[in-house]
Length: 223
Image 1 (cartoon, one colour):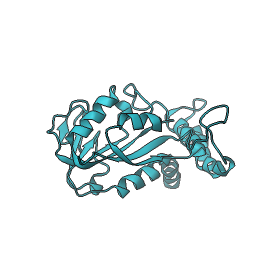
Image 2 (cartoon, one colour; image 1 turned 90 degrees about the vertical axis):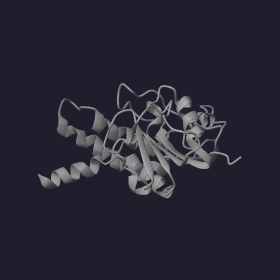
Image 3 (cartoon, one colour; image 1 turned 135 degrees about the vertical axis):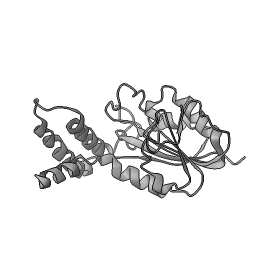
Image 4 (tube, helix red, strand yellow; image 1 turned 60 degrees about the vertical axis):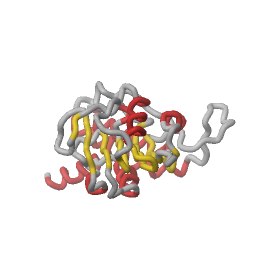
C-alpha cells in the first residue's frame, strides 16, 4: 500500500507545476515583494522580503484585502508576484492597474495565469487569457518575457490529468489512474506537431495555439 500511495502521489503531481516553479525561481528577488493570492506562501523562499495578501486569512497571508483595491501605498514594491490568481478576479484590468500602482518605477511584475484549463476553485473562476489579451491588460508595462507554459500536446496531457483529478470515471475512484497514467504518456507525442496556425485557413503561422497557460515578467517603466 505505501508504494501504491507513493505512485499515486507522483502521478497526481501537477504537470504544470514543473515549468511554473522553474519560472518563479528564475525571477527570485531579495527586493520588497507583494505576493498576491498568497495563500500558504509556496514561493516564500524565493522572496524573503515578501508581504502576502489574499482575500481570506491563511498561514502565508499578512494582509487581507482585494487585489482590485489594494490597501497599500503607491510605488513601494520592487516586485509584485501574482501566480494563478488573475483568472479568479472578476475585473482583471482593475487588479493589473493596482499592481502597476504599487510597484516602484523599474519594478517587476511576475505573473502566471491560465489559458486552456478546466474550471477550478469554483465558483470563483472567471476568465481565461490569450497572450494577446495579456499584452492588452499589461499595455502600461514593458514586457520582458511572455512564455507558453506547455506546447499544444502538453496541454492535452494537462487536461487529461485534470480529468483524473477533478472527475469520477464510471463511478469508481481507482479508475482515475487511467487518466493520470495517460497524462504522463501523451507529451511523448509532441513531435507530431510540426507547425501551428492562428486561423483555420492556415494562413497565419502561430506558436502555442493550445498552451495551458502563460508565464509573464514585465517591468513598470522607470520614467
